Image (cartoon, rainbow, N blue to C red):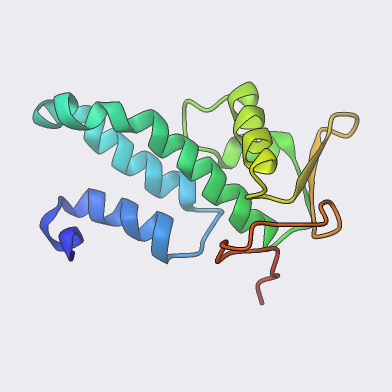
Length: 138
């Protein structure tokens, strides 16, 4: 509906960061900037504050999907650094496990090495309607 042109530029940047751009190493900076904007504006807090936590969860899911296209594994501590502020290890793990249950992600958590392993050999089936998959970026 071309709604994006009518929103605040910071919210437009959030949309662009989550839906258009592919830069997982800078995603948290861009999202945090938008969330700081929402939390700092008094007139926005009543309407937008309820969306902050879901935006963080969507960001984590998008981040892990993008990282899975670049790396075959990553340390959990590094992923926590790349996640938006306010997301701790347990929240991160819950989001990843929920996404794996829904077959949105192909990921295995290895607690012995404190790492995540990505790949298409982890599950036999994956959602058919997913536009994104375990394809490797150039």
